Image (tube, rainbow, N blue to C red; front, side, top):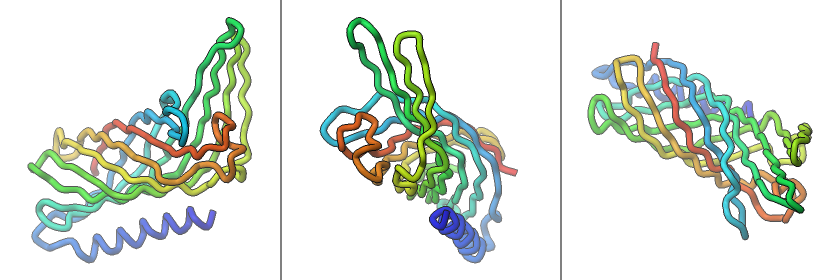
Length: 211
C-alpha cells in the first residue's frame, strides 16, 4: 500500500511539474480516459515464454505539452496481466491461467513526428491488487484466489509505443511494456513451480478520448 501511495504521489508531482513547465505558447494540459486490451505473458529464465493471456486495461491520463513536439503523459490504469500454460497428460488436456491484476502508473514522454502521430517511451510502475489461478483438466475447472503477499507486489517496466490522433480529441494507441521485476517473492509462486524468475510482458492496444 505504501508503494501505491508513492506511485500516486509520483503522478501528482509529475502533474505539478508539467503544469509549471508548460510553455505559454502551447496548449494547456488535457485530461482524458483510455481503454483497451492487454495481451500479456510471463517470461522466465530457463524456458520459453508461456502462452499469452487476454485481459482489459483502462484508466485516466493527463497530457501536458512541454513544447510543440514534446509532451509528458502520466496515467493511472487498471491493468489485467498474467499468462497461461497448456499441456497434455495421458490423453487429457490441461491448462493453468494465472491472472494478475495491477494498478499501473505509466509516465510516458511523447514526441510528435507530425501533428497527429507520436511515439512514446517511459517507465511504468505497477502495484498488484489481486491474483488467482484458473485450472482446467479435461472438462473440470477450478479457480483459486492467491494471497498477494506471496508475490512481489511492486512491478517495474519500460513502455514503448506509438499513437495517432484521429480527431483533436479521439485517437488510438499501441504500447509494449517489458517487465524488469520478478513477480515472485520466492520460487514457490513461479507459474511452473520451477524456481525460475517470471516477468510481466504486455502488449496493449486501445483507444483514448481527451476532454
